[in-house]
Length: 185
Ligand SMILES: Cc1cc2nc3c(=O)[nH]c(=O)nc-3n(C[C@H](O)[C@H](O)[C@H](O)COP(=O)(O)O)c2cc1C
Image (cartoon, rainbow, N blue to C red; front, side):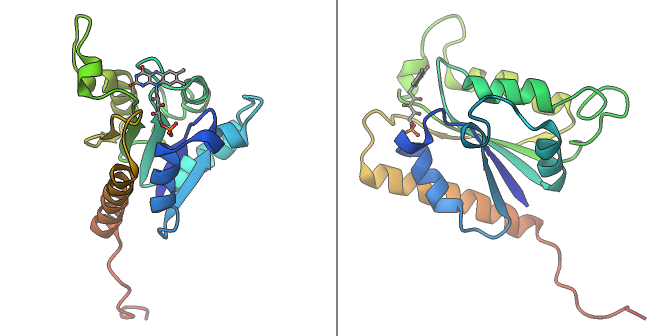
């Protein structure tokens, strides 16, 4: 199944991320955990999060970009949930072989990221990508929706459809072959 770790500080005020979630939430085998709604006090239930991760074939980190980075509760979630001895380190192999997808929205367009010594959008994936790889996960090409400050209804609909197609294709590629009812003695 696909687990979406959703981190929007104001989910009820979201346009872009809300549309993305609406487009995928009815897909069987997609589970959404909205961190800011689950943990408004930032008191993360580490065991519940690890149990959810254990069920997942692919983990999606979905969030609006904030100051070129993750919303704070998602950063805290990573710090708390990806424990030594569980996600990395001695016997820390719980995430090995799982796929990882970054699904991010940004207010700015591609040019918004052309500043500083590393002027492109893809470098912003590096902390999350390195974290995933360090834990033995398979990093997938990211899904980004830019320009949310100005994008209109058709653009949001198209983004939702593209997101849905991405997740459905993943599930189709990774579905178990149907039980043929043979070989049960
Ligand atoms: C505190 C804060 C920081 C933000 N920083 C960035 C940024 O660094 N780059 C950018 O393109 N957009 C930035 N934005 C805009 C959000 O990414 C944008 O509003 C969001 O992706 C839209 O999605 P939503 O409709 O689901 O909220 C920021 C927004 C907030 C509230």
